[in-house]
Length: 554
Image 1 (cartoon, rainbow, N blue to C red):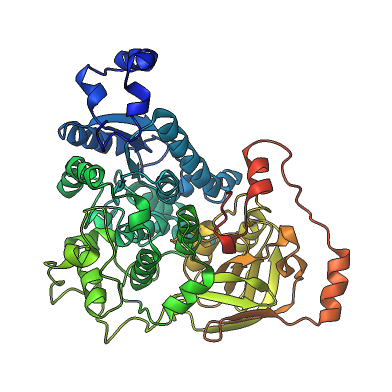
Image 2 (cartoon, rainbow, N blue to C red):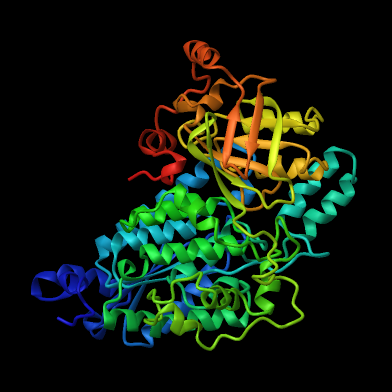
């Protein structure tokens, strides 16, 4: 048995495995293929979203590159859903759930089929951490490939432009004709949402973690670079098989610290907190929300990228992607250079010859003149979030907000109020029963936050939820409030007019209520939203951990 065939040999070697070989012959295996290491290629291709519609084309390039290295590729599919399409609907409840389904499906297929190595291709928010969780559980030579970013739409638009356009339309700032014109031109083809939203955040996080090839996270979905990236996978996975380099060798505590620093520098999504904690748990690395706060105090925000900034991922790619940024952070002793990567080399070795950004570029700020000297991802605690909450505060919105609560028990109620011009300056919008259990599924609040921005209220109101925010959300937003309303958290006891104070500098979030008042409200509290009795959401609600624990189901 070859050292590269630790798993497949048990499936296809010897006379007693004739049945297995017979079935594999029907799929196209030849005599020679049975002696080759088998590499499963997990494709998240789907026509349900532009993020993934091109991924089977990339998978074909990857399979060919694997076969060229005297390995045997075996392509299989897993699911994907579309956050952007389902946003603001009940279907969005299945978004975070899909992360677990994807991880489970990759684990199931690879273990059943005894693949020696795995390549996973993801192109949208949840399938990327889902892929990484699956690869970590399997812990055999693996590489992640990002499907790539979408090109900018007409007039430098993207998906968030459309959603903020709805807010502008609802407040009579633009006409329906103008809104439809944005809708028709904002998304020109395949690829993930173009800003530093969750997809590009997670792609960058995975590259910084060392689980994808250098430079891959910023590439356009439809580009020569992305094709070259895919054609390089065969040699890379063969090298990992030869050296028996596994995710546990790469996804270390230090590697996660690197990943956190990079996504802070890029102005990444709040979802990164949720996903990185979940990914760490899957590989038995200790990581919690407090680590983001500790690391964040010495991690500057450097990238002027959407949603809070001006530029898109494709524009960052044009000046070198994230590699020069990582080199800058490494040279400043802000990254661990000794971390192993899927190249078989350390991070320092990968970055050794990386050239700096062009002098005239305006996207990445210098370390001595950062956009913000510390992290925009703030972990807040207080009586309203005893187990923590995650805020996205760049400083543009201010660092402290005091206002009166305006309470809603669903995203739909909130949207009706926003579109009906019921939200006023100084309001603290509270959306509850949208947590992992209460949703179930922890929906993202991109539609209401975009509507708020479109109405010009982004710096005039705060937005709190036990649900999540899209990477496209910006403004004074605080999510992942735990304990959530459905499990008895204080957010479920808030009433209209309660005074809420959010202080990003102190790291606190509190409601001005006496203990006696809280006790009285707890006595009278009942959950207004029953949990489904059967199906995927029911199973998820019964097993899911809190957002502060990564909303994992293990």
